[in-house]
Image (cartoon, rainbow, N blue to C red; front, side):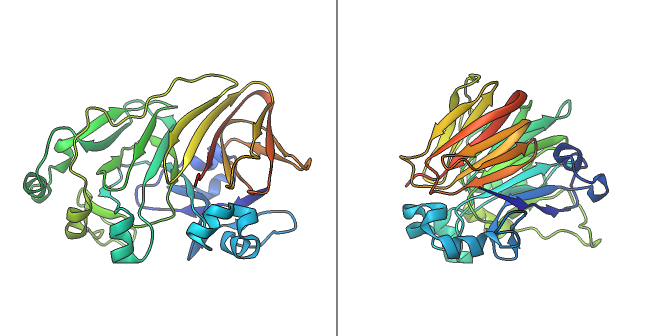
Length: 323
């Protein structure tokens, strides 16, 4: 099992809660994003401890191949790690944006698209997300709204609370509002098309680049009645949150030890701790502590995983990729 040194990003909208949440040096704040697990070139997380300390995630995939990520995943993704995991803390609203799907991203950028899952871990009073269109919208109506700086009027809005869940397939327009703190589990891509950014200046004092032309072809104009992913919490049992070709994510809210059988699974497993602390133990007896704000990668070679709370509660988001 492996822990990595997170990569801290400090965008213009970044908040100040991630340092306290992860119990790290507060002098590092503000942190808008903490990249927990990434194999993207130029943003590769590095093993933090143990015999592989100092190796990048991509170096591990290159060395261990299917033993790390699984036979089908290695055949499908090669040396590209198939997930990107982040914590996001917004002090101000993020830009209105969209991500391309796999076909468009391969054509334009030679990389995967970006579908993502948001799990809310903190929310200040009144914090909200805007996701998707709130009524049927034609491309022409959308373009006029962008030109008149009122695209947010076309979007569905959600006031959020911890535990809320949203799945955003590539092509769905969205923005994260001020006061929101999320776990984001996504495809391994950093391609974002900004549509509207409130006339905001970047950290360099210059207007931030917009990508309205690129976004126009990337947007899915489908209107849904509800963009939130609903589930029923169930303590001490696996609660599947999402399952698709990109990732499967389950929630474990534990008050007592539970064993997760992995013998059937041809994939690595990623565990993100959102509340509490505990210990993960694999079938070989290797144990690793985990606490709020930490992420652990369990290799595909593991046959089972025991998840044990240290005190009253251990809440984990556990994800993998099914062939």
